[in-house]
Amino acid sequence: MNVLIIGSGGREYSIGLALHKDPKVSKIYFAPGNGMSDTLGENISLDSYEALADFAKAKTIDLTIVGPEAPLVEGVVDIFKAEGLTIFGPSKDAARLEGSKIFMKNFLKKYHVPTAKYIETDDFAKASDFIDTLSAPMVVKADGLCAGKGVIIAQSRDEAKEAAKDMLSGESFGDAGKAIIVEEYLDGYELSVFAICDGKDYKVLPAAQDHKRLLDGDQGPNTGGMGAYAPTPLIDDLLYAKINERIIEPTLKGMQEEGMPYEGVLFIGIMVVDGEPKVLEYNVRFGDPECEILMPLIESSVFDLFYKAATKDLGTLDIRIADKYAVGVVLASKDYPYKSSVPAEIIVDEIVHEELKEKAHISWAGVTKEDGKLFATGGRVLVCVGVGESIREARDLAYMMTGQVHFAGKKFRKDIAYQALRDA
Image 1 (cartoon, helix red, strand yellow):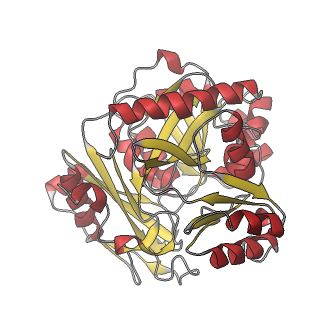
Image 2 (cartoon, rainbow, N blue to C red; image 1 turned 90 degrees about the horizontal axis):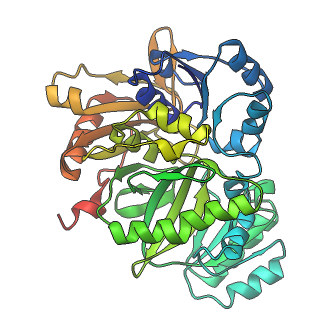
């Protein structure tokens, strides 16, 4: 089978790596890919979704997988389906679950999916009045896509009002913040839950925990994610059942009733408050770096998982998940997340440790090649992934791998998976 993967990050590399090992896959194309994805397949550069669809037809692509949110929100799935092509991801309408936080919150309210109390508005006076009813901390969110950074957790009412004013004026996030959500802060612990959906049926992957803050101990600014681990011991069968019955199933049913059946990855950011799951947000694609740790845990055919979801046939799939743990540690550039960093050459030591060779790998993200040399050119450069019989073993392997990689300004957190290991 021939596969086209749209995107250029570590998420897309990780999907490609899993497919590269799948005997059902013969050829992988990345559009545009990164400086290391061409070791798994062929990178292509085309300037429109229509051109990509033409390429998919010309190369007899059996399945296209969309990695990032922007192409989904812009309607790439609709373009491909109009040409009779098989593509994994939600339609433009369904992608509004991520593309518009207001759409998402109103959908949750309509279909009685548990979430935080909120107001959606483009009027600062209304936002200010609602803020006065809340206790600190509280949350202010821009409506549109902000690359995972359009959420402010305000520690006071004055700070929340300032954030709301900056968003509504366009100062903070441009047009993405011209309408906002203000909501109560939920005090609990977060989970990342991923459901692969075909419009009706779904398969839930092991729950993960992401580490959004830049610095150890969850300090510093929010980032796209500095590391993750899965499965997390902070979930049990009862909590999975609550998530399925109260969140995933009413969401899929509601999307059908809205005339936009949900197909693709439903990424649910969940806050568990006193044992009860509440939706923080929906994303319409895999998280990054969660994708990097979930792909190695899937023992059954990854191609089948995506293909059957894209062809509305998930009900016939028997998905097998390894009885193991995966930990991913992000290595970021010197000035991330504040500004772009100067390109830095990457040197990877020869790996002589047999266990490290067997149980750990690198998922490449913000890298380019020039004259045969590899350079760190993105904010998040790569993810070191370890897979083990325990979280501790997987964590140790991931950190051993970080010691094999060298570039000027390399930064990473030293405490990934600390929540799970704190009481271990």
